[in-house]
Amino acid sequence: MDRVLLKKNSIGAGVGICVSFIILFFIMEKFRLVHNVLFMLSYFVTLFFGIFFSFQNYKHEVKNGIGFLAGITIGGFTTIVGVIPFIVFFYIYCTTINPDFLLHLNGNISGRITSPVTSIIPMLIALVGLFSGAIFTFILALFEKRIEIQKD
Image (cartoon, rainbow, N blue to C red):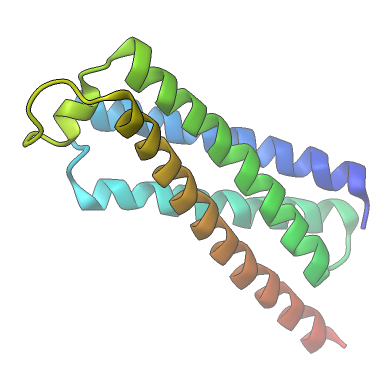
């Protein structure tokens, strides 16, 4: 397991995921699609394929299969680098750039949303992102392990 290549690969894929998340966010806000569940699922699809391509790129670089531990490490770093900066962006967006965005998300709240709720929503998004990234990583690492076992 080449740690430098692993980190470089994970950071590259994570930045790609984060940029994709931000682009999806602006598209969804521009066209008022934040309530549409199908468009919300696009975040999960983006995260899954970002982790998948991170695995494929690493496998191509090392010319070997990916071990289970290396797979977990790649997926974990990729998820963290992809999700955490997006959450920071989302928090800054909701607190400084467009404070009324959370009111738009939940139209039945009257008045201005207080600061604790503004902090809780990004934390919930982070938990969902990190948890789904962990599940996708585990599934892909098991899949890669199965491929290695079949080769032997």
